[in-house]
Image 1 (cartoon, rainbow, N blue to C red):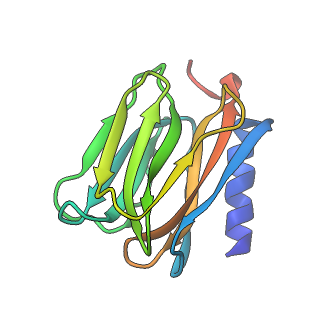
Image 2: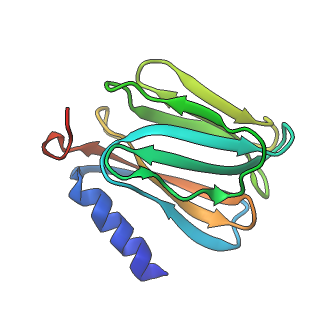
Length: 163
């Protein structure tokens, strides 16, 4: 599993200026199986499923060049989705956690957001340390639903994008 985590990190850094990489520490109860949600290019959309207006049941990202990632957790009902515009990036993730991730709020550089889940538990707020960085990928633990997450931020090298 550690080999996979290192490979994911190296892939993300290949598409980013790693001198501006930062990491937001893990939140949530943890436990289960580790995951990494990573793809090629920038994140262009996010989908989140919640369990009956309660905790986060599952999520996935769409990347510029590799499409939709596998779902972390479960799919149940209709997803809430945020599709990003060409000049839009995820720059903040907030929410609540206890044993599972209770709620998520993805915020973009254009002031739009996607809010999903029930706001109960312990609060968290994640953002990059470099002002031009954006969300590159998430990793964490899944025990049925996602039980923990950590954010990885970087400045994407424009040589690797269609911008």
